[in-house]
Length: 150
Image (cartoon, rainbow, N blue to C red):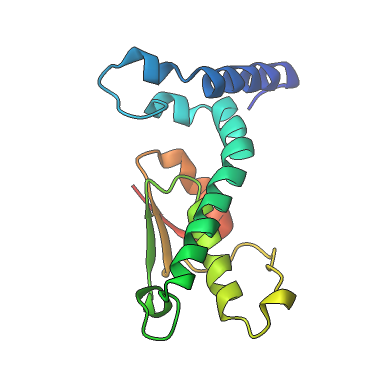
């Protein structure tokens, strides 16, 4: 937000908050790595979206691979049958996107040929939802085409 100088300051502040995690050191009334106020800052979100997207997506994908190998995506399995998926504390929707892509990948006839569709939004507002206390994540979840609730 603002001019280039203001944006640079916001990004620098976001980088510092991401690295220093002051909420963990405060040990105050807010639980979590960052406070609600910190999560809401545009500069912090800029940094968080850049760094956490890779981590959260790949962690979720790896977890889903283990679930698939345990049969949860097979016919009759709870993840195969799931009509609605909710990510609690879902933030900007990384885990939902990973689940959405993984489900398509696992169901494909030839997984070696499967490629993710990059067309967004995915228009699955009624099937996928991110529940999060931070209202500013809604914008990102909406861009993915999933539902959001606070």
